[in-house]
Length: 156
Length: 156
Image (cartoon, rainbow over the protein chains, first blue to last red):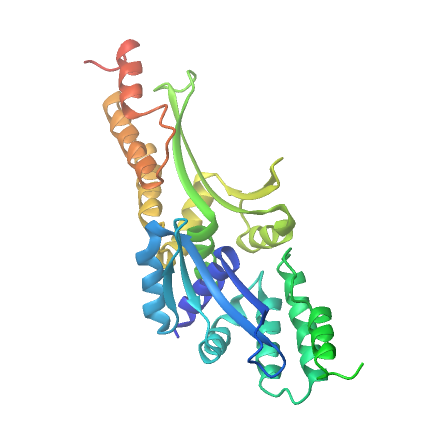
């Protein structure tokens, strides 16, 4: 990726984007929760063509038009998120910490070998919510810990 | 200015900034209106330090904290606006046309020799409002034309 374009993307993410990670309840998962991450750029729907340009230039992600007049450019798969972070991280100013934490979470997620480790990962996701000033905190590490204990996957 | 920083600023202006020009009624001016221009970057007040960093790095403009929890980094003097545009214009994607029009307005403003020319300049300001989807259009070129006719400065 062209470095000026990377600096541009970093800034747009700082201004009108978000990096977020959350835990989604999903009983088909080994530890009952899915670690769900996404990097998103937002614009009013009238700037959809602009977001499509960004998407074409990065060669990953996709565009979604919401019903409330907002258009999103979404990068959600692990490989693409890591590739994007590699390019833009040096230029981030407001969301550098989120970028580093997302990278850590992705890496650790791939090497979880116990419920204990999964709870530790959930704690990193809690930290993410703090960075994003997120108010909704339904599936916290505490909730994960309790669920895994209830199901006998984690010893108290 | 470092070019990666210029690309960053361009993007931030595209996302959370504005370039605007308006006509302010002012009877002490030769043609009764002041052409008032400003380049502004916006952030929530909690990101004030970030805007101060931008301001320190560009070495021009100033910070203003509004009462509604928004912080502004403002570049309003002609020389600084032109210097900023010189650096960031190549990297702008959404506000390139506004940047070019601001430059044109600043240049023409310095060489106004008749009321006729001033009205033509006011028409460029009208065009600016269209680019910015601005709803308030109190002092349009029509208003300027009428005022200058009323005062005998412009022959009908």
